[in-house]
Length: 412
Ligand SMILES: Cc1ncc(COP(=O)(O)O)c(C=O)c1O
Image (cartoon, rainbow, N blue to C red; front, side, top):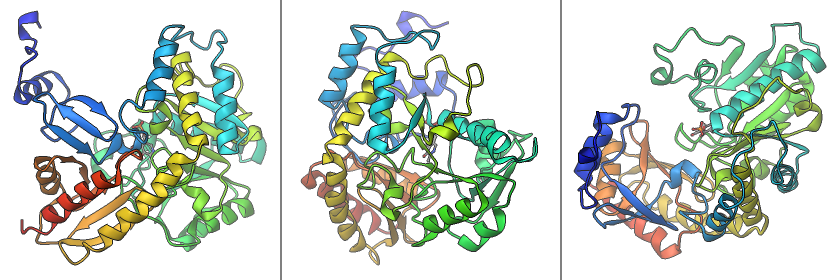
């Protein structure tokens, strides 16, 4: 049993906190050995007072940095009023949040949820019901076409169509009804989309796979194939959306519109979990009372923070920062190719950096960066994913890239 004596004293070292996590928290992550106590903007401070540049931003959940003052004050203001009503009653933030988010995204209806996986699950359920009730797919036969190397979350249905063995092993039996095609291969997609296809679900840029940008024209072709087959295009913008690539949606770069978008991460401003499916009213409109929901989805605190996020995005400032700082990031990263880096991909202030064979692994590079005061995380063996907060100063961005140049260029 835990007693107060077990609690680390305020002066406890990182090792004490890590030992507590190791003892009491399920080992479903492998974090870097840093114990964060505070954050502000692009910087965090650990329990020993060491400062680090955050080059990960909670996988894009912290697009506006840590504790953006406007987001914090929206949260504090709402904390002083009401935080949860359940959806058994109306409250005065939900409709405003939904209207403002729909206006920002050019969509018609909003289904608020909490986590990213829940938003994806919700979109899948909506697409299936729409296929049966509107498209006329025979009961039980709807298919959803997805891409390999996808990452859409961790629920049983979502890992059913993952191609990552670690994410799937021992979690079956799986949900049927998914067809997996190679990402970026328009011909394979054309073959997979049939009159039984309810939807094609794609990340416009695959984050977890290593910030993989599909070939030019692929997403437009996906749109055309969906139109031809009367299927829905669902864009998972949970990581790529909300200014990360310089636009509200990454899909905007391709001038392509999806029927449904899933949003999460940055929608909660790094303060509370907020996700949503946004899109066509005739598609989201298939849901009727009792068919789907969540106790916390669309709660007053989430909506108040979400509204403040929408306000920040409606100025265009963060999209602009991502575009200009992203151009700088990619110029500098491209100079590292051949110097310990074998390839760089991405868009805006978001990059996948492949470390060259013979150099450090992704994990070793993350640890070496941490030792130089920069926090980021590997994805797969030899790729680093960089997603600094969009509030970062250019000089800090350079500081992080300098550290990366040093780490990548060293022999393992
Ligand atoms: C594209 C994408 N979809 C869905 C998810 C799942 O979000 P959550 O972890 O909030 O469930 C993620 C998380 O990394 C993601 O990157």
